[in-house]
Image (cartoon, rainbow, N blue to C red; front, top):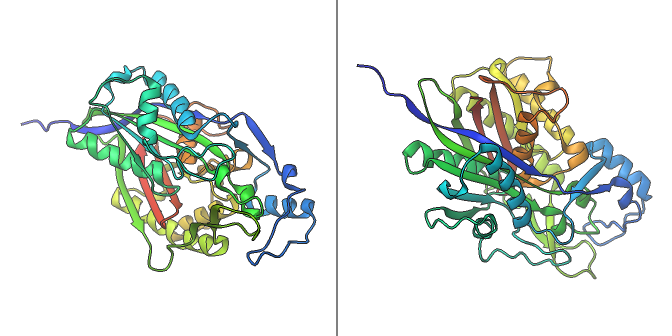
Length: 360
């Protein structure tokens, strides 16, 4: 008897929304930055931004226009992905939206997550089918990659044939105006349509690895008060050095475990689409991965980077990277049928995940 083809989840369409508002580093030179104890940082603004660029490689970032909410950006990216896939949106079985702080309106510090962003997106897309189940996922910056893992389960089990997976955040609106870390954060959205496909050989979503570390690392990213004691509200805070060390220690191990689980070698990976949190950190992570395989010569071309001009848009970074890659919008980078891509992210929780994707 002949073996039956297996069901795989394949990306048939993608989209991204890169906000039109560009904020260059120079815009922060007049900011009053403070230390955690509330004391003013006396370093001149131009020197602060210069050192910031040296550490992160960020020269500018994109932020959402005041009238645009997270669910709007998610909808824009979804519309592009749906058109790219050429599907009827009424045939979508699940709509999963990954985010962190909901629809935080411009000038407000209060997240709005009721109703869910996924339900808002479904409404904005005009999808009427009650069978299109919409829900949100909050998993820190790895939210979109985790939502893709969930979508893969739905499709592999036969529960769904088409899933819309979106990552969107207006993370810049939760940043403390007196914290130098605010220069890292940006806004954006990315989306993918995953569909079931029968195949005799593995294709699309392959095996994944996920870990959560709370015992020693729970508070590396959290919400907290401004460094300015006279400033009300709570803001996104991170323990940068500890977060750097955590990512450098564990992301390479997750990447290696993911390769082993898929029966692949490092040489099999065409591109690593990694969360764009800090260029220097991502380069250090890649070097650690190569070192695990005894490789001293690190090919940085395996890791496309967008952080220099797009900043850290949290859950939107990996889907945006994928969309730009497959549409030939990343100079010097491409992906063809049969190529293996690793998608991996690290963020609040602390959470790390990685999955392999074989281009159809």
